[in-house]
Amino acid sequence: MVKNFYIFRHGQSSYNLEGKIQGHSNNSVLTDKGIDQAYATADYLKNKDIDVIISSPLRRAKQTGNIVSRVVKAPIQFDERFTEVNVGVAEGLHYTQAQERFGETYQKWRSKDSADQDIRFENGETKRQVRQRVFSALEQYAQSKYNNIAISGHGITLTETLHALDIDKDEVDNGEIIHLQYDNDNWRYVGCTK
Image 1 (cartoon, rainbow, N blue to C red):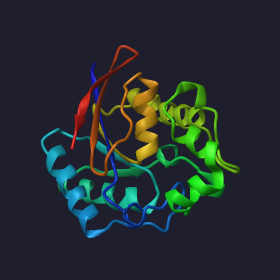
Image 2: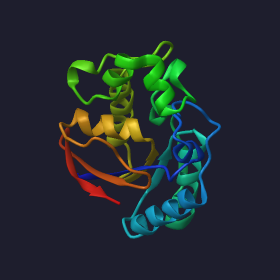
Image 3: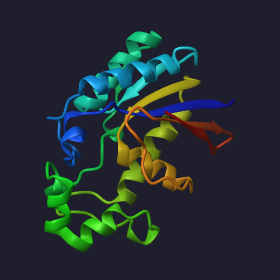
Image 4: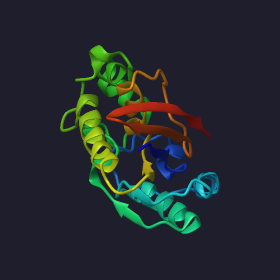
């Protein structure tokens, strides 16, 4: 049986607006634009027969997931495996500060080159670790009773999910939805919707 996964990035957050690296920070909340994006995501998903919403427990994803849950009338659950990448000592820094402070490490960390998937900031995690935990969760939900699953997540976790499937996409925008299908132990990228 084909299972549909609609994985969306949270709406614009206060840290997005300020140009800060969010990571595991739980201080960032949706802006008015982010709330509008969450409703647009919900509107797109309302006719997809969503069985369940799975969300990162971080506030910005949780807020987005709760809006989608109310509109599509599906229950919401939270799963730590969909949290944003742990950026360690870079968390909360403005992107320019991270570039100045970490230079080459920052550039390699931002790179989509597979040779750089083990780069991390001090006290942070690598892209390889992100991919492993996200796919651990996806595989579990692919084996669940649910057929149409929506997931409220984050930019780097979504980008790394695509890179793991050899999809060349540099960034997933706020409110963007990735559609994946799972069938007979195979993942298939269907497309992205903004």
